[in-house]
Structure formats: C-alpha cells, structure tokens
Image (cartoon, rainbow, N blue to C red; front, side):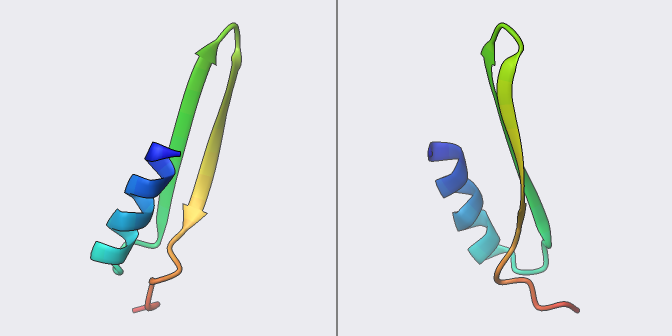
Length: 44
C-alpha cells in the first residue's frame, strides 16, 4: 500500500507523467507488477 500511496502522490506532483509502475516480490516466484495510468495526465 505504501508504494501505491507514494506513486499517487508523485502523479499529483507531476501531471506530465503518464504511466507509473509498482512491483513487489515476496519470494518463491510469487509477486506482482501493476502499471498505473496517471489520472492527472493532461495529454499534452
């Protein structure tokens, strides 16, 4: 949750960034990666 909160805050501060990524590895081949689209992106 901390990674998602940090990414959301950075999206707000930098609306020119369109995508972000969070990745978490918990070992034994288990983990997850999420690609996020910035809702503040202005399309310029």
